[in-house]
Structures are given as C-alpha cells and as structure tokens.
Image (cartoon, rainbow, N blue to C red; front, side, top):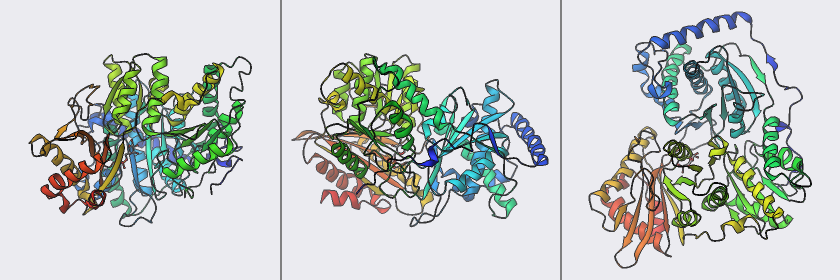
Length: 627
Ligand SMILES: O=P(O)(O)OC[C@H]1O[C@H](O)[C@H](O)[C@@H](O)[C@@H]1O
C-alpha cells in the first residue's frame, strides 16, 4: 500500500542556516592564492594550444594534455569516456549491480567537474565575460550524492569556479538558477541519474543558454580522461585529496517555486481570487521519493490546492516504493488509485529530478507517453496555430493524425531528449515555428520556457488549462482534450542485451543496428522499407537527419515499416542502442492485433538469425515474444 506523507520533507524546505550567500567553509588563504595562479596559467596555455577539442570549446583551445599522457590514456581514459551518455554523464556510483563495477568514482566526478569548469571559463571569455565564474550545484536524494558532491565541488574549485550549493534540487531549477535574477549563475550542474537504479548517479550541465550538447559533453569527458590518468598516476591510484573548497549554501528552490506560482497566477488571472487560483481544486503529486515534493507544498498548496492523497513525497535515495518515473506502471497505477480514492481533479507523477512528468485526469486516465504529447500539443496549438511539434520517432501514427487534425505539423526525430530539443531549436532557426519538443519518455520542452526540458513546466501548463476550462464552464477533465487520439492496437518494447566485454558494447550495438538498415537497403528483407530520412517530414517521419553527423552513442537508429503481402501495412519497428545500458531497444507498433508478433517473427528469422548477430546479441526476449 502506498505511503501518504502530507508533511513536507525538511530537506527541500528553505534551510534556516543556508541563507543566500552564507559561507559554509573558508579555505586557508595560501591555497586560494596558489589556485588563482594556477587557473590563470591554464587559461593562458589553452589560448595557445592546438589540441583543444572543437566540440567543447566552440573553436577556442584549452589546456594541452602533457605529452605522453594523452597517448597513454587508453583503457583508463576510456572508463571516463564511457561515462558519457549523450548530453549527460551517468555511471555506477555504488556497489550492488551484478557485472557492473563502480565507475562513477569521486575522482571521476572531480576531473569531469574540473574539465567542465575549465571549458566554462573559455566559453565565458568567448562571450566577453571574465573574472568570477559562478556555478550552482544541485542533487537528487541518491545515497552517493553527498560524497560525490564533495568531489564535484573540489573539481569546480580547482578550475577556479565559485561554488554555490543548492542541496536537494531539481534539474529545471538548476537551469533556472542561471536565469532567475537573484542568482543568475554562469552555469549549473545537477547530480542525478534520473529514474535509473539507486546505485547509479550522474551529471547534467547547464549554462544560461540551456543544457550542454552531446558534443560539448564529449569534449569535456575527453579532457577529463587524460586528467584522470594523470591524477591517478600522481596519486598512485588514490582518490580525491587536497583542501576542501569554499562552498556557499543557497536556497534557490524557494525562489524557483515562487517563479512557478507567479506563472500560474498571471496566466490564470483568476477574477475573484488571484493569489489562490487553485482554491477548490484537488491536485495530488506522486514524487516517488525523488525531488518533486516541493511542488506539493511550495507550489500547489500555496496556490490554494488541496493536495491530500499525495504519494511518496519524502526524498529517499533508495526509492523504496517504485522508481520515480511517469513511465513506471506501478507509479502510474498507484497515482490513478489515489486520484480515484480522493476524488482529485488531477494527479501528477514526476521523475526523480523533475525534468519528466505524466498526469492522471479526474477519471483516473493515465496521461503519459503519446497522450501527454497530445495534450501539450493541443494546448500549444490553441495558443500557436500551425506550430510544429517535434517528438522522437517512437510515437504513434495516431499522434501524427491528432496533431495534423489541429493544423499542426509533426516532426519525428531521434530518441534522446536532447536530440528532440536540438531539432526544435534548429527548426525555429530555419524559420519553422516550433513550440513543442517532447519525447515519449515524458521529457518535454517548450519554446516559451527557454527550450528547457522541464517536467514541472509541462504540469504548470496542464494546471493552467484545467483552471481555465473550469472558469469557462467547460465540462470534463483535461483528458477530454485528447478524446480523439487514436491508440495503436499494439505497442511493444523488447530489449536485446549485447553480450561480451562492456568496452565493445557500443561498437557491437552499432553493428547490429546498422545491419538491419543494410539488409533493408540491400533488398534482403522483402516487405520492409526504411521510413524516409529528411529534414522535416510530416507524413513519413524523419529518423536520421541526413544533414547531421551521427556521432553520438544514441545516433544510430532507424524506423522501418513492414507491409505484409496479404495483410497490408502491419506497423513499424524502431531499433537503436540503449543510451544507458549495453542493450538494443526494439520498439514495435501495429494497428492490427498480432501485427507485432508477425514483425518480430520475421525479424528473428531473416535478420537476427540470418545475420549471425545472435553470436553477440541475446535474442531470447524476441524468441520468447514470438513463441
Ligand atoms: O536508451 P534507454 O535506456 O531506453 O533510455 C532512453 C532515454 O535515456 C535517457 O533517460 C534520456 O534522458 C531519454 O531522453 C531517453 O529516452
């Protein structure tokens, strides 16, 4: 049975001893002097070097790896490079995973943070900035957080950054700490592994321009790799050492919550109770013991909502109830139950760090995945007629029809929230008005919100719509806005583990994914056709943009449709390597019952077995599904 905690967790409340600007610890003066000298040298050396990674510096050069070290990074350095997951850093931070040793160590975090700080200094100089570089740091409640935070602070300080500790925070709040006038930091880092197991942890990086791109993070990890090897050699394999850095404890979360409240108040502009527009509404939150509890007591309750029935608000780094994840069936079903039990108008499910969300409407209907995209698209198309909506290519044909029926355009793109957002940014730059960028996973970014991947803002939009509907005297809950969304008859996700040593997994995964593409292109798979690639293809989908370079780990992915000689179009499959684990994800959708099984069976015989991929890919899930 779900635990209901109505009192807020202390950790996310404004901390009495953490007033803005209060100093936690001062380092001894000599250390500070040495540090400043060192930093000047680093930046100067960078300006003359010819080895700086272009992606990370935007063309400016950074400190050159000492000769010999770069070449020698090899295996050791690769342990750092492998921590890059698209635009994030993710790794195992605690023992407990079979076959996966701890690789996100304090030293790894320290060298990555130092390389980020160094990159940032160069970036800011390019922008005409200089002097103090101020970086905020937030984290989720993972057990490894405090220890790794100390390493993160140390790395940033080594790079000459002033560090501001937000404590328990959310990913969108970290970005907003670079925007909110009272804070306006140069950059922010969120330490989180989102919905991944409690043993993992990771980093997300922001500047005022938004999240770093995969290319930028790749450059930072490259530099961190040689630094890691050099540091290990110097320390004899030991961990982080040295004087603890200066860290300022700051309360950004209260200001951020107020920012969200202000948006709701202003947009609803309630005619009788402006400051409490949610009076008379029951809205409950399932925070999954992640970071989202603040939304209940610092946003909803202060706006007048009754939040009785909220679930798992207390941060707990072991996530004892279920992973905080709007895609998690347990999370959704518990929230649906709570909404119905309490007669709530809305239930909200956040992921750990609140960059993803899903909702449950008053009838208990789960609105996540395609349905959430449809709901946000309906709201956005009302506000911006004709806007384009970018999603990953795992969305249904029904969603495309839903968007088109409202006059919008649907661009299907690569999986990976950053890919989806980048595509939207690019479309806007190319003159295609694009207001919504969302992944089926619940990652949602809006043009009006800094193109930020922000689960809280998505919920804010839905809440505003809910209140507006009631003010307009409209019947029904927010779910009524997506009544005509057609659902596929079947939707299946199968995972195929990549066997063998982890260091070969990416290469093998790419080989497996590319083999399917080649087989189709070579005409070896009758009935299969790759969905069109292109810049902005509404009806057929764009799966790999031919104008991009698939450099990232998550870049090789294809969608192919299958037309059966007798039954006609059965559906499509989407194949790609997992961003986080050594496996290949095979998504399938069909409009015909049994269609997914037919497609899987065909791929099993004519692709997986015929190509011999089963030598290094575990095809048992596909076999089980087929049989
Ligand atoms: O590759 P998977 O394990 O399926 O995970 C895929 C997901 O990875 C991360 O969580 C990204 O933030 C998402 O944008 C992406 O959809």
